[in-house]
Structures are given as C-alpha cells and as structure tokens.
Image 1 (cartoon, rainbow, N blue to C red):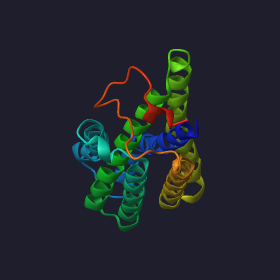
Image 2: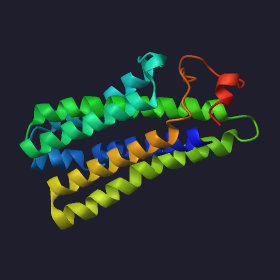
Image 3: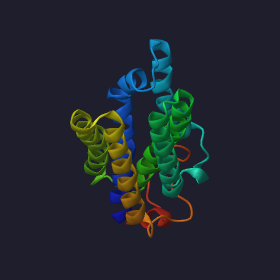
Image 4: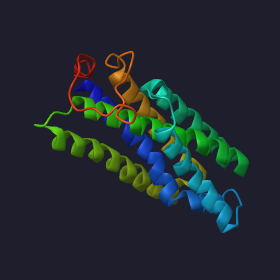
Length: 203
C-alpha cells in the first residue's frame, strides 16, 4: 500500500495548485500582475484546467509517471512564482500550462494505482481515501495561503504555497520511489477488471 499512499500525497500536492487557481489566482492576476480584463483573467485561470484535462486524456500511458508529474509540478510552480515576482502575465501562463499538465498527470496516475489495488472487498474504501487526499489538498493549502497573505503579503505567501506544494510532492515521490514498476497500469487506456501480477507489485 506504500504506492497508494505515495499517489495520495502527490495528488494532494497537485490539488493545492487547483485550490489556488480556483480561489485566489484571479485576485493575484488583478492586483499583482495588473490584469484588469476579466476575460483575460478567466483565460489565465482556465488554462490550468484545460492543460490538466489534456494531460489526462491525450498523454501516452508511458508518460503518466510520478517522476514526470512531479517534475512538471516543480517547474510550473517555479515559473508561476517568477511571474508573480516579475509581474509577467505571459510567464504566468507558461507556468500555468506546466502546472496544469502536472495536475492531470498525477491525478491520472493516482487513479490508475488506486484501481490496480482495488478488489471487490475494498474498492469503496480505497477510492474514498484517495479522494480524501485530493480534497484535503484543495482545502488546506488555500487556508494556509489566505492566512499568510494577511500576515506577510501576497508574494511572500505565494512563495510559501509553492514551497509547500513542491515539498509535499517530493515527499510523495520519495515514498513511491521503490514501488513504481517499469509500466504503470493505466485505467484510462486499459480498463481493469482484475489484478494482474504487475498490479500486485503496487502493494
């Protein structure tokens, strides 16, 4: 089950990005990057979710791996932070694309791991636990960011969020480092109805 916990930690980290974009990113774009057009703000926020959707639906199964998702997440958060500190909206969009791809990749990988470990006796419990990881990632980082924003300001608080997201993702990557097989079962490209010897290696 170590692989499942690793996937849960990673999806929690990536969900922190979702939470940020769903709640506070529009205000950051308006107040810190000087974007006054609401349509442009909508495009900036929507880019994350479009990128995540594409990563879930068109990425080859061979690329849906923890290491790739974590690397995309780190690059995305670093570029987004650079955009906030340099007041660059185009750079923010670039970082958003990377972060969105990370969100989609890690979510898809985690769902595949969860499906591989499920059997009729624990499917509901395991799936519910996975989504508990996901929703905790949506809620906790945003609450921390909101409190920090009032205490130390927008740019410093966003840096704290980026550090929290990346460090959490690295913890998840380290937890699953010795459990990921050469080929990860992928429920998006191959529906799973029973456990194969490869899937058994996730435990």
